[in-house]
Image 1 (cartoon, rainbow, N blue to C red):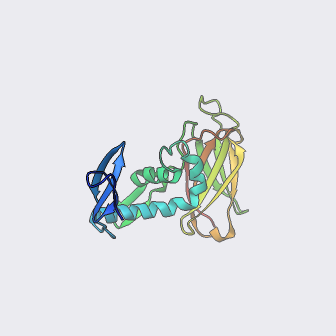
Image 2 (cartoon, rainbow, N blue to C red; image 1 turned 90 degrees about the vertical axis):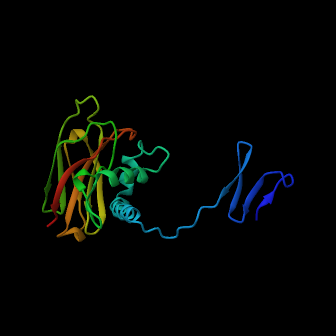
Image 3 (cartoon, rainbow, N blue to C red; image 1 turned 120 degrees about the vertical axis):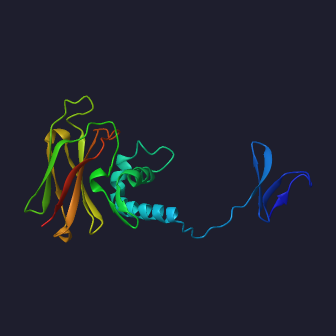
Length: 212
């Protein structure tokens, strides 16, 4: 219910019909309540919804990684929203409605630390993926004790596995994959995080393969 303050010449607070009364910095004003569009379906809206749904599905199982990787980018928004904004614009390929994630261009973290150099992977018989890189600890934006966050994503299961047990100077690390990943494709990334966990690197896409 709307309320008229200070008589008929006073301000209106609340809703009267399709009018909404409010006050801003001591100034009373009225605005018209916008029409309720329950399910807009213009081509542009459908296109944007499709991209949003695709990228959200990809990033949700990586949420803990995104919290670390986009912490410094999350200005007036959450890390996941910052990651969505970037990757919707830069990591989707195809034409509506046949969109797919461009994993090679997907960025899981953004920061000032030096990226992984010479990154490679190797599948081991023990059910592990072995990731390696060259030691660039002498880079001005790197340190040998930077923590290496290793990420492996399974697009079939829509699940991610991570490991953070080694440093930049170690030049290699392993990610143990669950048995359920057998026969599925995977994509892998390396992210570096400073020892005090305050700064990260931009993620490095290592490649794709099939876990056999």
